[in-house]
Length: 235
Image (cartoon, rainbow, N blue to C red; front, side, top):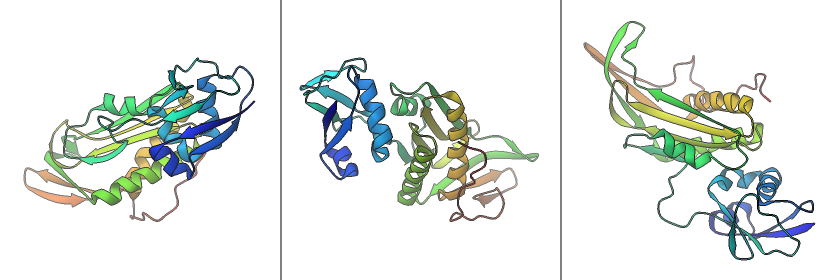
């Protein structure tokens, strides 16, 4: 059956239209609809996890069956309370909040990477760290990483937050979370997310030791943020 789906706010803006068309089999559910939208309109994929579907102007659960002729709409969150998926912040990071941003009916695996402040690096004792970022560019580069992941691992959804300012030992400095249909993709996409974050997101840390300090950025060889990502064996 051929259906038409209404879009609003950020969804319509990203799609460049307020209505999209899909072909779904008879007996398709709301969950099937979301999967089809994610596959056929990848630009919308990263937004779907926080959206709801309405059928005939009523909120629908994922197992609700869609009928030909239904009025269908994808509804993004209303203003107020929705955490951004990508952020630079001075506030303490909370892993569970980011997990909720990417969890969705199609995800069979959610992987979280949590980077913390360690005390010893190559035998040298760190007292504390201070992070600085070119904030607007850092957020845009996080979004770029998410788009790269969505292209490589269809159905993946991503959230990243990085803290700036002064941090003590064991505090969380960065959280990157990915949700994917299957666990293998979650591990691969999660590793890709943090490696690319280190490569292209403009964030620097100042290591403060007992006898001095030093600003550091990318530490994986010569810094080249315009280099293409490593394809490796990912699929």
